[in-house]
Amino acid sequence: MRRTLQAVVSIIGVQVLVAGVVLLVISSYRRAAAGWVLPLVGFVDVVVTLQVGWLAVRDIRLAGKRTVGVRIVLVLLVVTMLVGAGVGGLAVRRYVNRPIAGAFGSPVMDRDLRITAADFRCGGRSKGITVGGTTCRVALTVANTGSAEALLRARVQRLRGEEGEYPGLLLVEGHQRGMTWELEAGASVRGVLVFDVPRGSVPRSLELRAKEESQGVRLPIPADE
Image (cartoon, rainbow, N blue to C red; front, side, top):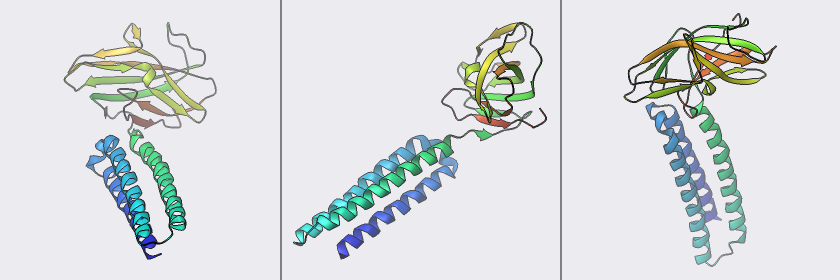
């Protein structure tokens, strides 16, 4: 019984230590490394937890005592801890990967792209652009601050509302329309991002990303826009 209690306390201690490391990672400057640090921490957590349980069963068996009850207790504890760690890991991943906050009129950074969004509006028509719902437009100024070519794709950008999310339709620069802006290192471009939003839908936020898998920036849309 004493050895079982020691194992339980050790497993709980490991989980507390892991939780502390996770909080340290997501609340410090090392948050950018969370993509590989947190999976590593989770792997070590699983290995150490299983090792503690196995050692407890081995010690009790060597002492000549029955281990059936101990195994059941430890298995239930380990499974509970691992399920909790899995659920917590998903929650942490969503928290870490959520878009950072931005504002219209202020430059925001995602990867190597510095993006400034302004003059968001919905309604009316845009010459030469056909939509099935309501046209929404936002003026963009995009600069590539990196040392290599970068792309801004319309479909990666999102408008979000209570009814769902809507990808960008077109990028317009002067008389040129397309799905992508190509920016050489140090280059910048100014134009308009166009969305096709279902009639009656009310966009609540604009999400801008350099790439589909990047963290992105979320800009709340004022209620009067």
